Length: 322
Ligand code: UDP
Ligand code: MG
Image 1 (cartoon, rainbow, N blue to C red):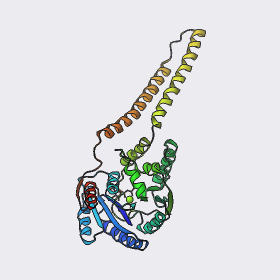
Image 2: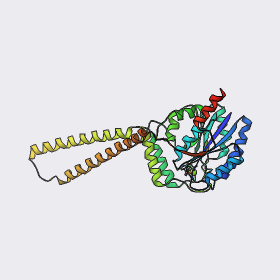
Image 3: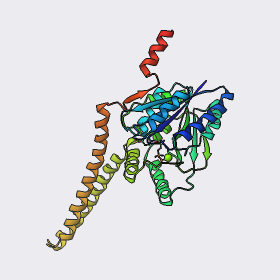
Image 4: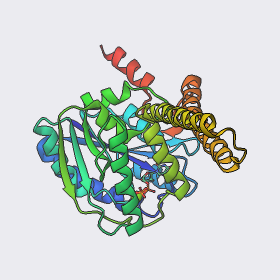
């Protein structure tokens, strides 16, 4: 049986070698259970030496594969590419910065052998910045309430997937990919392994506040249409309040005649309704923006260089053999 390990790398020259060493050791450890391994490093358009390091690793070690993108397409694209190129009976996705301990690989493979289709490694938030973990917890609470899929805090992309699960993921060909949600959406039998949170071995995180915010909004948008529903409800509520106000004012006019002052209420109504309308248009706009990219149907990534067979080449070879 074959185990594919997918490692998205973006400017990771400082950690790649350590990562490789550690992977190598742990992949040798699963040999006893009858697994060969392939290490698929996806270089997501790095601007440092990552690509060259990967190439020299590939020359030395035949289990190392690399795929280099033409530019930075983001981690989602890198993971998708890895899944596309992988041919293992099970696949593990992990970060290059050693925050996902490779020592868990044997345990995850064991889970696969027990018959689980997803073996999820869940981290705690020990050592994270207090502010960050506070917001993250709130965020996941909110997302889980708002969306139809369950996304537990601490469960990320670090997991083992069976071929069945991988094929399920690949069958979802949406452009706006939000893996956390998709993993949960596909379901299948799941097992959770807990591990202690780690800090990045070296290099820097690629997350800026702006990226996090946009990722967060994307997460809510891509898995449900509840924000649209909320606009609908808000509209309904404000119509109701306006009606009540109208009736009350009408009665007042009937009883005591028209009184001119009303500046405050007029301004309030204009501002609140204006805000509500803009907000709703914004939500609509977000969805239309997603549809726009969805409809264009552009590829998720462009491969510049690789030592692997592409999908088409793989098929050709299989045809030749049969
Ligand atoms: N990554 C990537 N493309 C990007 C950004 C990140 O492939 O555009 C990779 C990165 O090399 C790392 C993983 O995604 O292996 C997680 O990135 P990072 O450590 O910056 O995220 P964090 O662990 O801080 O959430
Ligand atoms: Mg990291």
